[in-house]
Image (cartoon, rainbow, N blue to C red; front, top):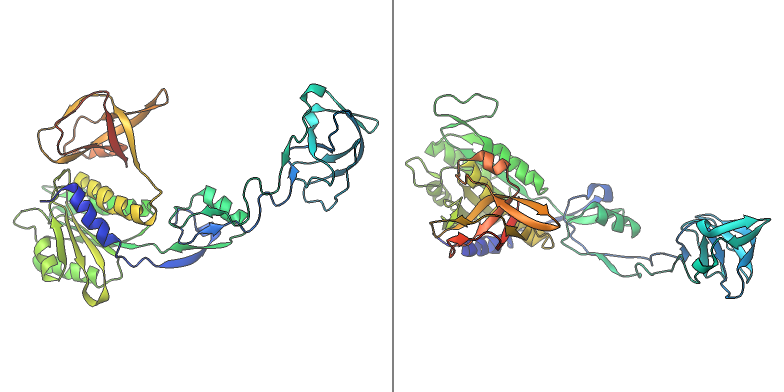
Length: 401
């Protein structure tokens, strides 16, 4: 059994060996993808000096507070008059500032009578006010979106401003799911006797979609050595980049997966991690025929399975592909918690905000069989190996889920 830190490092090292391919997609199809290129501004922003609001463009002069109106400029207009001292031009927000003008008087401070502009409040007049200067926001050539950034709607805005109708992104990794166990029935059936629903198949499918990768289901297979081997061979012969199996990795009589993985040439990197929940985790690499498939043997317990996925698949993958994403945070613990073991515990908890500060509340029932505590939580509190008590009011580290 190895430590969480060592298991994480081994997993991360193998993730970095994945062949991350790229593709070019339309900008409207890029949301929530991870960008594979740097995006630089191809122009100054604003492209030209313009008005920050609807008003009147004037040439400021400390002795003149009335102006003769000589025309108007609307947004997008090619009209570009010269404004002289004592003259004003009606201008709309975003319109190019006319030559000679250096100030915009907002309509709220303007009185117009007989084509003459007066100020409602002379004291509010300030030279060079309400102007957006060329390049004051972004200079041409500035890096706007860094490679390995998760593309949000804000990124789409920046890319569109740069005229990028298409952008290069990383191709979605294909992640296979194979659930095992004699006790499993599909979720559309009522479990009878000692049967349970195969919730892991759906949990992992949605978790993979949640990180915008492509799930590939290999279904449910019984704890039968030949059937399991056949299913595993099919999965390894497919084009998946990662294979997730659930169940069959503990020490039971019918836990065949480690044996099957070894027979198929999967190099086991570790089996069992000093964590709770999720101790039975197995991780290996399949490299035959030029492939590099990461293979995870996740526990069959739904809570352990999900926590393992968050810790060793989601977090590692996003840390490599989009390192700016940080789903960890610090909060104040609202109760004292203790543990007897020397494992690193990941406690299902709830983050909440009170008075602008983050607090975390630990869910009482931490049994690995308690699915309700998982659905009722929004984070995992990290309870380190060398600690037995976390006192109320202490600062703790958590992972959003």
